Length: 189
Image (cartoon, rainbow, N blue to C red; front, side, top):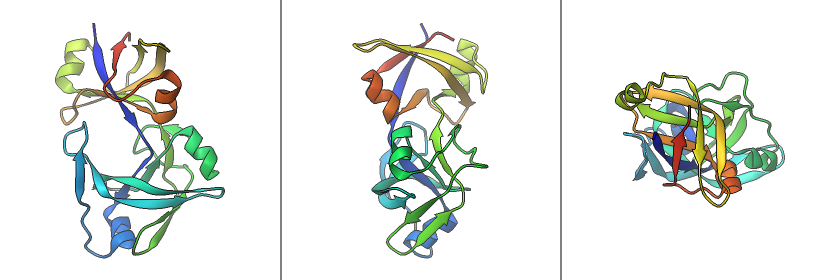
């Protein structure tokens, strides 16, 4: 049985070094609050506000380290509240996505693009993927048992020797299915 731990991903933002400097001040370095499931990635102590045409969220957690491009990952419910219509995309694929205003303690940035609803995906270490015969970018099906058992289709495999085995879904998906971080899914392929 191909079991995978599940992580529920709440709204968060990835920022470029340039945008960190604009939002927090020149030369500012994010402070790690908590390590995440993927090696080298962390939830930072810092938060920002994001403002859309219809609404605003304060205290949006920044995930580090800095990335080459800034990107806000939200759920469909968050998108409605903000008044934006982001596509479901893999992280990092932001071309043609809506923008958003980001406000920090030292300034603000108007992102021209970068708002997505993250596609559900599984991070595989290359060894796990090879053992189970799974290829990078392959679409998978995952079953999660429980009171509101659910089967997730179109789960994208992301394979790298830098990853640890972990499935990521957003808060809308988790809440609808009664799933919490640490629950287990079974890859059906």
